Length: 244
Ligand SMILES: [Zn+2]
Image (cartoon, rainbow, N blue to C red; front, side, top):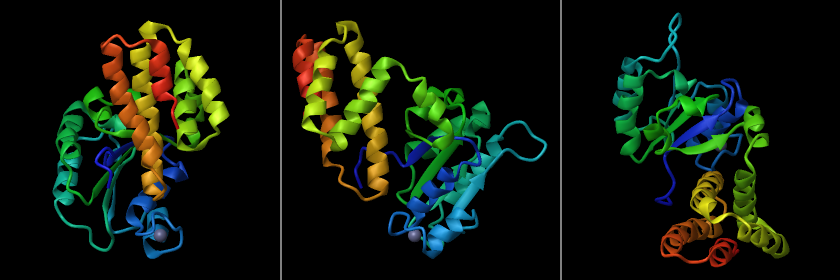
């Protein structure tokens, strides 16, 4: 598996978004989520023995640290029937501060077979240290966030999508747009491209699709950070980012 792919995913959606359990099925199913096998059927119904669901206890407002400690104990055991142990934390923004800190340890160095899905409607309420160790995916209910994306974010989403599979003419047009970015916004833009490319890459790895171009884009981002600090012009950086 690609070493850049985090085993932990923040899934921005409502609690009942079917995409959450679909993602769990993709992790559990040996065919990446065929929809038909034992793993998929039981993941979709939330009854898979290797899918552990952590949620806010009845009558409580937050997820206590004890729930995370139990999860860490469970994570030390191999999956019972499938290739992965998936831990789904519903409304993960309700993890209290000590629970999030306990979580950090396991998502920093998880056992190979473990996958963590942190479902939340408000990713901003998770600690930055937790967010930085996870890839972010958005479910259907999170379209609002995409619609309110800032112009540079839209540009970054478009760039990653074109790189993954678009027309050369569209990429050329985008490249001209990039050249117009103010110098002071380039570093933040490269960070956005890295985030959006990583997001797409996770989706592709899950589906066993080709990842080479997105991996190359991530490498370009690292290179462009260096070029930028070395004083290279915006035009060259735009050209380096918009290859496909
Ligand atoms: Zn399946």
